[in-house]
Length: 114
Image (cartoon, rainbow, N blue to C red):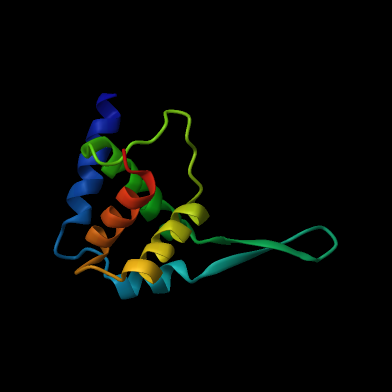
């Protein structure tokens, strides 16, 4: 539990730093996908990059640990692709707020609100 709190605080401090990622750079980072092929050489799927995946999972973890507005089930295992779709659905429906962090907060509160 202590380690989870420390990691959450570190991630939160990075998220609010002046060098925090912008909406544009986040979209660019998350638009890069790895195409997955089966043994026959057929395309069977795609997955988003590790940086984007980590950013989304970290943001959700920090938010769920520090906000009473986001409630995740203990057994929930959110995929980064799903979290990216939550973010993009929010952008499509509501538009972006002033920065990436507040947009993610609003998107996750909308999707996982208590």
